[in-house]
Amino acid sequence: MNKKTGWTGMTVSLLALCALLVLAACSKKDNTEQSSNAPAESAAPAQPATPIDPATVATINGTVKFDGTAPKASKIDMSQDPGCKGANEAENVVVTGGDLANVFVYVKDGLGNRTFDAPKDPVVLEQQGCRYHPHVLGVIAGQTVQIKNADPTTHNIHPTPKDNREWNESQPPSSPAIEKNFAREEIMLPVKCNQHPWMKMYVNVVKSPFFAVTAKDGKYEIKGLPPGDYTIAFVHEKLGEQDQKVTVAAKDTKTLDQSFKAAAE
Amino acid sequence: MGTQDPRGTPLKAIATPYNRGHHRLAVILACWTFLLIIAGALVTSNDAGLSVPDWPTSFGSWYKIPQLVGGVKFEHTHRMIAQGAGLLTIVLAVWTWRVEKRRWLRVLGFAALGTVIAQGVLGGLTVLFFLPPPISSAHAALAQTFFCIAVAMALFTGKKWVEEQPRVEFDRRRPSLFTLTLLSIFVLYVQLLLGAMFRHHGLSWWPHVVHAVVVSFVLAWTAVRALTVYPQIEAVRRPAIMMLSLVIAQLCLGFTAFLTRVAWGRDAVQPELPMVVSTVTHVAVGALLLASTVILSIQVWRHVPVAFEERLPEAQRDPSAA
Image (cartoon, rainbow over all chains, first blue to last red; front, top):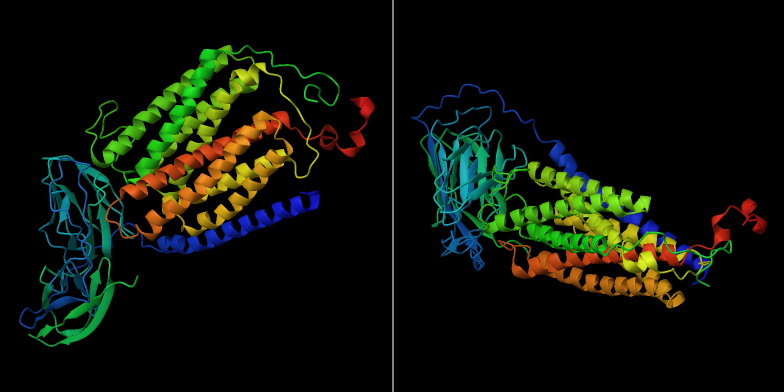
């Protein structure tokens, strides 16, 4: 190899490396900006709840379906912890006879400036059989989430939010419930256990009590909705979000079905 | 050629006695560090980095060993091996200070100690701040830096290095082989950072994959130069062959890791055995590749120095001054 070609080779390699680093930095910038735009940590000061006339409220219900052949549930290997003895199928896409479970349905838009009090009663998140129950949870911002461990092994509860505060606490067997709340709205906030990597669930933090999670039969019901025009969002952890617009009159009961197709490969 | 420097004076063996126990400790530290790198890779590959949520204690205790099940098995074992590495480094640094006549090696012993302390702090910070990609990646990169220091100390304290007279041949080619070895270390280090950022969710996979082409080119260039021009110098030939073999193995392992983790394992509900084995082996072979390149660079610096006249500015190239 002569002197000239040697230096040329090295220069080309260095230029390629510089270009690569610049491109990598640019692709990362988007994520950084997104997180820096996140709202401040402190929750907004509580405003008095807007009254709703119970004589006029409406109901929205329906069924969420899965279009096409449902993916086969992945098997979970729990052998790394003898304290884990539960069902061993993943819950990321649960389809029973075409009905899709674990879809979070909520009023995404249409409530205007209405405010709602966080209920005093906590919602419960149970760890049993080294799985979370429920797999998808809805909670109002500021409402207490009570986390219990019914397993004979230690879990750690680790939410990885975008807009709320991240935390990670371990919970040995028979220890008292951990009580937490989430200050800001956030849909499909992942929660995981780093001791048992298959353990994942999603908390949905919303401002209003108008939400539901589809059961195994794909059904949901949202009650107590004041008359108005709304956007209803159907959100699934793997299949994404689909929205529908709906108008409800006083004392209406409207059926709003939805279907999801398999995510594109 | 081989025993005279450009000024005509014979090169002498280093005036320091070989200390077998000291050298063995350096070798043990290097092997222990390699084990530690594998243990660390197992933590990341099993997504167990936060299974012990506190630091510097483990579940509030300084000494109690928790039940080693689930992710705790990987994380706490990693912490215990790391404590062992810290202790070995303290002993090696003190021993080096006491028995070693080469001042720079005494300093290197304490540099190793400083590095292992910094590494422990980075490991703690990454737990306390929930695995931020820059800190986790710095932790991964410093681990391999420490491994290279430990390997270099094992080399410098070895019998061959201490007692044998180096066979020297001057390098008049440009870029010099020494420059190529430094460039190889640089591109490998960049590759290490890109890989660590991908593993810790700070970057996409493609910068690491694209840069693998640059690494392969530079390392192949370096190895071919070493093996074609200086095949007669064993101290250069052996690490060059090692480096070339490892880079080929590493490319195959990288491809396997890509298939198991990115292509096939995208929707896996938990880390599966093929993805854990392929990524941990990829990390381990990557550490060996960096260390063998560092050894090659050291041996080239010793055995194939840049010709003396090239080191001096033109005005000072007066043979009578030599």
